[in-house]
Amino acid sequence: MVNIIVVFPKPGDAKNIRNILVRSGYHVAAVCTGGSQVLQLADSLGEGIVVCGYKLADMLSSQLREDLPQGFDMLLLASRPLLEQCCGDHIVRLELPLKVQNLTDTLQMMTGSFLRRKKREKQKPRARTEEENRLIRDAKRLLMERNDMTEEEAHRYMQKCSMDSGTNMVETAQMIFALY
Image 1 (tube, rainbow, N blue to C red):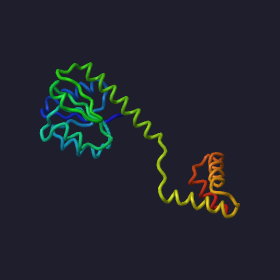
Image 2: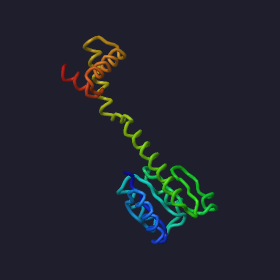
Image 3: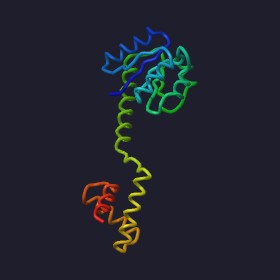
Image 4: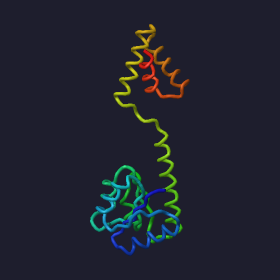
């Protein structure tokens, strides 16, 4: 489920957009009138999509986009002349006057893209900490000293043990220290 924040300077406009999205099956986390409200919510939510107009109660949409955390995309609803002024990463533009079908189709595309990106990020292996790298180096050094191996041979041996046992390199390094 993707968190959606709707923000427009007029509360009535924001509620109308929220109602359209809720009827279409989207989860609207909040409705706001100003960018500062959005930024506070965004910090607590962590990621999602902001549906907004060009000018908010306290800032422009471009300022809001700059201040949003990295996990947020923006759907900007504005007139053609205003949309032509706006560009940037993670901003999708939709021209007013708005057709409900265009809004729901665009949001469906954005949520699909958002979820695919989130899935790819989860599948990326996390980077090892310096402590983990030091543990692996020390285990290789131990293998090199005790078994008269080169660094490459020690590394390959650890990789093979890691794959055979179904553990990662850090766990394999810990097992090597436990054995010696």
